[in-house]
Image (cartoon, rainbow, N blue to C red; front, side):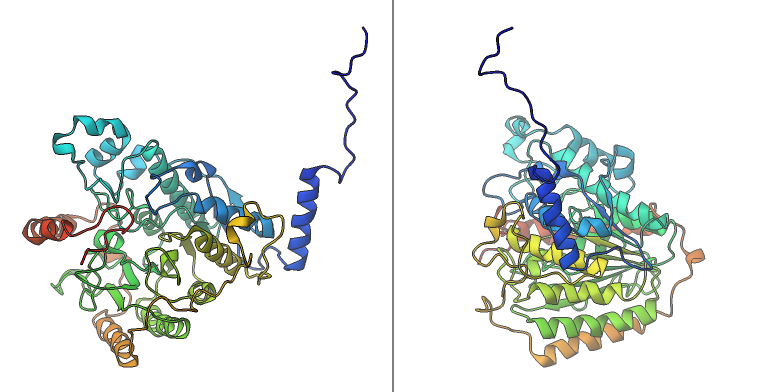
Length: 468
């Protein structure tokens, strides 16, 4: 057969000349330059399913799952995967999600599609779906994927396969048992904690999101097996979700096991790094000493960073990460989750940094030149931009106000008489009649006043921050 110009001999590239090998060499150089190695004495696992990154809430919605793409690319570009056990978890199934959520709500999520709105009465979605929590193509897959990753991480911890398990796609703390809320549909945190409670007598849940972790607090309202500690912006009338005040400490009835086990640190606008770190230590130390948890779950919402699209604090990345570092030093089994965060480039920087905290590595601030999508981190292309200067918000947290918060935490912990005995409380998911009673009370409160409050909420783009 006559040779033509179309068909040419194939010359196999020599080792080190292909783009893949060149990238491998660059990553290997980053591993050496940053001193990245597997931690000594403990294991870190990283749980990520790339299918989550493809989901899209809509062009004007502030929640961007694509921030996970940026995060994972940074983790890989620095070579941090070399220090961790990497898992691609399966999606959570129906039975796993109804461990906490009501079956009719899960069935709704499983069957609904955007076009179904045409058949709804008054064009209103049930289960609090709408602008903040839109119905989009692939919604059920999205919920099951991020929930499955948190469940997988929790199981690795309970099986002693991992000491610190990371799932940046999780941390969706507003979802209720039968209702979506604040961009959250399934409460993967609750599902993960329920897994931990099969093996751990007491779990401490820490929430660093700028919004109150109301969904997790509500889920464990009536048990002493979980203590919740949330640091957040609080304004009952003007900032979502309007809960988490200093006096919101659990059931009012001291006979309820969950009384004084919901601890809140309600902050005002503009808190800075040093104040936040010191406050975190001042409230964490007595919690640990009194409650003596056997496992920790920390939600690392990035909307508490300065410059966030929906946030109102002035924190830098290292300050936020210092709280994760302080928690890590406890030496307890630890589940590390994502959460809010609506400036994707800064969320990715934060979670890459906190991944390095988990593996015990100090990263070079200059982003690796081979990082995919590096143009999104322009112009500085650094891991640690200055997010507090100029400050977008004046600091309204006086020294006296912060001292009052710490004193209030100490006062609430006086009622927690040592660590509870696991024998006194049966293992969830069924928290018994107390939870049903709390749910009835919540429904009554909703009927009395919550409907009027919700009418004040803005749509997507404001995460329920109320209009003036």
